[in-house]
Image (tube, one colour):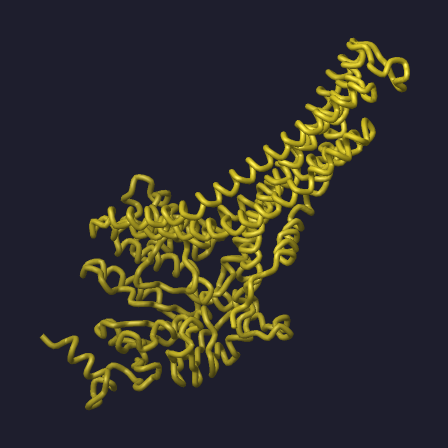
Length: 612
């Protein structure tokens, strides 16, 4: 049975837990709160002084019986100006510090959330789309930023205004106050009811907007395919449909918000009319002065405004609840460092000798490169009913070149994913230098590995940035040396900007062979103990393949190398070939040994590939 959605109090607790990111900035935030409260205190003096100003200008209906302070007109006017000046300064100070603390807190939240996101396992990314995750880091966190910088200050200001206003009207006339306060509960209850409806629409709208953002991400990431298949109109229609669905949600929400605002306006001004009618009767009876009625009316307007603002605050909180829930969902995901490691044993995870120091210095961890798969079974979490590996066993001695061949879907790429510990085996174990891979420090294991994939997707920065990604502490000379050994120095030096050449999104400004050689240079710079080549020379022209093969030969020297290959001509010189079929290693041996086996799968595949 699926988990029920969190209850509202639980969502509110989850949202409030994000306030811990304000802790480092509690001083400016507290000062902003204090300034806001003080500002609102001066704000409530304004109607009070206006009442005295009216009484000073007009004869009091209640005459000499009116107790209290009776200053002159000029004195009151100067005090009003002073009140406005102080309020303006305090409002500026509070607004500045609220925004400052909110922006810094959300920047910290973005950074922590991003670091959490990239630490999540591949299983997580396999079940979610890029656009959805991008929306979490943009629109949802923007909503939370608005809560820190707008919702909280508004709640403080309007709350202070409401409390002071109520106290002031009761001090002015308790009869009018009772009548006015009696009109508040219906407005508040209606605001709560409307707010709940708006919250439901807001959550659905954010979900739909995330889906539309995903369409943008996918289209732009695959813009070459979109244009090659002339599907611009198709993608536009797809996005337009998503926008229509978004509008189908936000329009009813807008109607609800409009209804809420209309109801509040009618309620507030209807209350004012009622109060003014009763106040006029009291003034006519000599029980209220001109200034007191003016003061009461102004305070009533301020209280009504605070109640109306409370509806906006409540609506903003409702929208932020959905955003906070999604952000908390990401924080509740387990990072991949916990995969396969029992919580009580995590602290005892073995760190490879010198791994941390080596990684800090930009060098590979001290791993010899002995790899063994022993009875490994695996099923992808998203497809638990479909076994991918079935008791797979294979090995690679340090420095040995091992090829994985077999039909598509046999499990070759899954072996690579398990070796990189993108996933953990369902059963069996993987040993590195005789130690269980799941007991070794994950960052240290990956620091000792490098992969050159079939389709290289570079980062959008410079060639230097992409090569140095293998070792971010590398010197300029080390980067140049890696480029030279990868046979890419010549074409890099041929660009006007040389190593500062921007490669564009995913490296679109470079050819496939150029991207491949940059990936090899990156791997050379990392100096791994274990190397993974996933069809690194497929789909290239002969000249590029020759240059890349030379670079790969240089790269594989002295390293344990796993070569995933469909083209058997590329694996003839390896030390050992494993034929992977239906999740098992059905054959193993050298090229000569396997080609000589009558009825063997490797021989059959060779005959199919080399037959003319």
